[in-house]
Image (tube, rainbow, N blue to C red; front, top):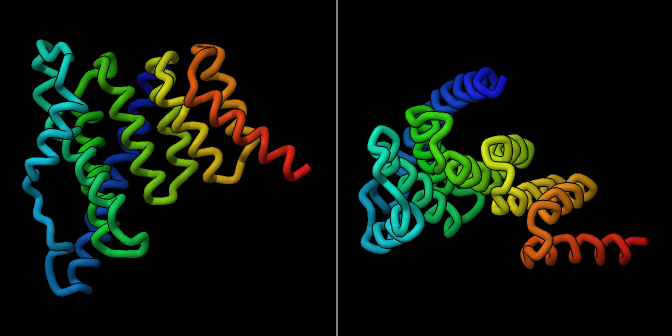
Length: 203
Protein backbone atom coordinates (compact mmCIF):
# COMPACT_ATOMS: atom_id res chain seq x y z
CA UNK A 1 0.00 0.00 0.00
CA UNK A 2 2.84 2.38 0.89
CA UNK A 3 4.50 1.61 -2.45
CA UNK A 4 1.29 2.54 -4.25
CA UNK A 5 0.99 5.80 -2.30
CA UNK A 6 4.63 6.61 -3.09
CA UNK A 7 4.02 5.90 -6.78
CA UNK A 8 1.06 8.28 -6.84
CA UNK A 9 3.06 10.90 -4.98
CA UNK A 10 5.90 10.47 -7.49
CA UNK A 11 3.55 11.02 -10.41
CA UNK A 12 2.16 14.12 -8.73
CA UNK A 13 5.67 15.45 -8.19
CA UNK A 14 6.51 14.89 -11.86
CA UNK A 15 3.47 16.87 -12.96
CA UNK A 16 4.19 19.62 -10.44
CA UNK A 17 7.76 19.80 -11.76
CA UNK A 18 6.47 20.38 -15.31
CA UNK A 19 4.10 23.07 -14.03
CA UNK A 20 6.85 24.78 -12.05
CA UNK A 21 9.12 24.75 -15.08
CA UNK A 22 6.48 26.47 -17.18
CA UNK A 23 5.93 29.07 -14.47
CA UNK A 24 9.66 29.78 -14.28
CA UNK A 25 9.88 30.21 -18.05
CA UNK A 26 6.92 32.57 -18.04
CA UNK A 27 8.42 34.57 -15.19
CA UNK A 28 11.76 34.79 -16.96
CA UNK A 29 10.04 36.03 -20.09
CA UNK A 30 8.21 38.68 -18.12
CA UNK A 31 11.38 39.86 -16.41
CA UNK A 32 13.48 39.76 -19.56
CA UNK A 33 16.04 37.21 -18.39
CA UNK A 34 17.41 35.28 -15.45
CA UNK A 35 15.71 35.55 -12.09
CA UNK A 36 17.75 37.03 -9.29
CA UNK A 37 21.41 37.92 -9.10
CA UNK A 38 22.45 34.59 -7.58
CA UNK A 39 23.49 31.82 -9.92
CA UNK A 40 23.14 28.08 -9.55
CA UNK A 41 26.63 27.45 -8.13
CA UNK A 42 27.01 26.87 -4.39
CA UNK A 43 28.54 29.61 -2.31
CA UNK A 44 31.18 28.61 0.27
CA UNK A 45 28.60 29.19 3.00
CA UNK A 46 26.10 26.92 1.26
CA UNK A 47 28.76 24.25 0.82
CA UNK A 48 29.51 24.34 4.54
CA UNK A 49 25.80 24.23 5.40
CA UNK A 50 25.24 21.17 3.20
CA UNK A 51 28.23 19.33 4.62
CA UNK A 52 26.99 19.92 8.16
CA UNK A 53 23.31 19.19 7.49
CA UNK A 54 23.65 16.22 5.15
CA UNK A 55 26.97 14.42 5.34
CA UNK A 56 28.69 15.04 8.65
CA UNK A 57 28.59 12.07 11.01
CA UNK A 58 26.47 9.91 8.71
CA UNK A 59 27.15 6.55 7.10
CA UNK A 60 27.42 7.30 3.37
CA UNK A 61 28.54 3.83 2.28
CA UNK A 62 25.27 3.15 0.43
CA UNK A 63 26.46 4.71 -2.81
CA UNK A 64 23.36 3.70 -4.78
CA UNK A 65 21.41 6.20 -2.73
CA UNK A 66 24.03 8.66 -1.53
CA UNK A 67 25.20 9.44 -5.05
CA UNK A 68 22.02 11.50 -5.46
CA UNK A 69 22.24 13.49 -2.24
CA UNK A 70 23.93 16.55 -3.75
CA UNK A 71 20.44 17.30 -5.06
CA UNK A 72 19.28 17.47 -1.45
CA UNK A 73 21.87 20.18 -0.97
CA UNK A 74 20.14 22.07 -3.78
CA UNK A 75 16.85 21.72 -1.93
CA UNK A 76 18.30 23.13 1.28
CA UNK A 77 20.30 25.98 -0.19
CA UNK A 78 17.61 27.27 -2.53
CA UNK A 79 15.09 27.09 0.31
CA UNK A 80 17.48 29.16 2.38
CA UNK A 81 17.76 31.71 -0.42
CA UNK A 82 13.97 31.87 -0.76
CA UNK A 83 13.63 32.61 2.96
CA UNK A 84 15.57 35.86 2.55
CA UNK A 85 13.54 37.18 -0.38
CA UNK A 86 10.26 39.15 -0.47
CA UNK A 87 7.18 36.93 -0.42
CA UNK A 88 5.78 38.08 -3.77
CA UNK A 89 9.07 38.29 -5.65
CA UNK A 90 9.83 36.25 -8.77
CA UNK A 91 13.26 35.42 -7.32
CA UNK A 92 11.63 33.79 -4.28
CA UNK A 93 9.28 31.76 -6.48
CA UNK A 94 12.22 30.69 -8.64
CA UNK A 95 14.25 29.54 -5.64
CA UNK A 96 11.27 27.67 -4.19
CA UNK A 97 10.91 25.89 -7.53
CA UNK A 98 14.60 24.96 -7.53
CA UNK A 99 14.38 23.74 -3.93
CA UNK A 100 11.41 21.49 -4.71
CA UNK A 101 13.21 20.12 -7.77
CA UNK A 102 16.17 19.17 -5.57
CA UNK A 103 14.06 17.29 -3.04
CA UNK A 104 11.95 15.69 -5.76
CA UNK A 105 15.04 14.38 -7.53
CA UNK A 106 16.22 12.62 -4.38
CA UNK A 107 12.81 11.11 -3.66
CA UNK A 108 12.48 9.91 -7.25
CA UNK A 109 15.97 8.37 -7.46
CA UNK A 110 16.52 6.81 -4.03
CA UNK A 111 14.93 3.68 -2.60
CA UNK A 112 11.90 4.02 -0.33
CA UNK A 113 13.87 2.37 2.49
CA UNK A 114 16.73 4.89 2.33
CA UNK A 115 17.10 6.26 5.84
CA UNK A 116 17.44 9.88 4.67
CA UNK A 117 14.11 9.96 2.86
CA UNK A 118 12.10 11.17 5.89
CA UNK A 119 14.49 14.12 6.27
CA UNK A 120 14.16 14.94 2.58
CA UNK A 121 10.37 14.79 2.84
CA UNK A 122 10.40 17.07 5.88
CA UNK A 123 12.56 19.57 3.99
CA UNK A 124 10.22 19.36 1.00
CA UNK A 125 7.28 20.03 3.32
CA UNK A 126 9.06 23.08 4.72
CA UNK A 127 9.59 24.44 1.21
CA UNK A 128 5.89 23.92 0.51
CA UNK A 129 5.17 26.00 3.60
CA UNK A 130 7.39 28.77 2.23
CA UNK A 131 5.08 28.67 -0.79
CA UNK A 132 2.04 28.85 1.55
CA UNK A 133 0.89 25.39 0.40
CA UNK A 134 0.12 24.30 3.93
CA UNK A 135 -2.16 21.34 3.15
CA UNK A 136 0.43 19.92 0.76
CA UNK A 137 3.02 20.36 3.50
CA UNK A 138 0.82 18.42 5.92
CA UNK A 139 0.59 15.54 3.45
CA UNK A 140 4.39 15.51 3.00
CA UNK A 141 5.06 15.53 6.75
CA UNK A 142 2.65 12.59 7.11
CA UNK A 143 4.58 10.69 4.42
CA UNK A 144 7.77 11.30 6.38
CA UNK A 145 6.11 9.94 9.51
CA UNK A 146 4.87 6.84 7.72
CA UNK A 147 8.50 6.11 6.88
CA UNK A 148 9.80 7.02 10.34
CA UNK A 149 7.14 7.31 13.08
CA UNK A 150 9.82 8.47 15.54
CA UNK A 151 10.95 11.48 13.48
CA UNK A 152 10.33 14.37 15.86
CA UNK A 153 11.18 17.08 13.35
CA UNK A 154 8.25 15.91 11.23
CA UNK A 155 5.85 16.23 14.18
CA UNK A 156 7.11 19.77 14.78
CA UNK A 157 6.67 20.62 11.11
CA UNK A 158 3.23 19.03 11.07
CA UNK A 159 2.21 21.20 14.00
CA UNK A 160 3.53 24.31 12.25
CA UNK A 161 1.79 23.44 8.97
CA UNK A 162 -1.58 22.85 10.64
CA UNK A 163 -1.16 26.08 12.63
CA UNK A 164 -0.37 28.05 9.48
CA UNK A 165 -3.43 26.51 7.83
CA UNK A 166 -5.55 27.76 10.73
CA UNK A 167 -6.48 24.30 12.03
CA UNK A 168 -5.41 24.53 15.66
CA UNK A 169 -7.18 21.32 16.67
CA UNK A 170 -5.13 19.31 14.18
CA UNK A 171 -2.01 21.20 15.27
CA UNK A 172 -2.67 20.15 18.87
CA UNK A 173 -3.09 16.52 17.80
CA UNK A 174 0.22 16.66 15.91
CA UNK A 175 2.02 17.91 19.03
CA UNK A 176 0.34 15.27 21.18
CA UNK A 177 1.35 12.52 18.73
CA UNK A 178 4.94 13.67 18.90
CA UNK A 179 4.91 13.91 22.70
CA UNK A 180 3.59 10.36 22.89
CA UNK A 181 6.85 9.34 21.18
CA UNK A 182 9.11 11.76 23.06
CA UNK A 183 7.44 13.17 26.21
CA UNK A 184 10.49 15.31 27.05
CA UNK A 185 10.67 17.16 23.74
CA UNK A 186 10.93 20.82 24.75
CA UNK A 187 10.14 22.00 21.21
CA UNK A 188 6.85 20.10 21.15
CA UNK A 189 6.02 21.06 24.73
CA UNK A 190 6.57 24.70 23.81
CA UNK A 191 4.30 24.40 20.77
CA UNK A 192 1.55 22.70 22.75
CA UNK A 193 1.82 25.24 25.55
CA UNK A 194 1.57 28.12 23.07
CA UNK A 195 -1.56 26.76 21.42
CA UNK A 196 -3.12 26.05 24.84
CA UNK A 197 -2.47 29.61 25.99
CA UNK A 198 -3.94 30.98 22.76
CA UNK A 199 -7.05 28.86 23.28
CA UNK A 200 -7.44 30.11 26.85
CA UNK A 201 -7.04 33.71 25.69
CA UNK A 202 -9.73 33.23 23.02
CA UNK A 203 -12.03 31.66 25.60
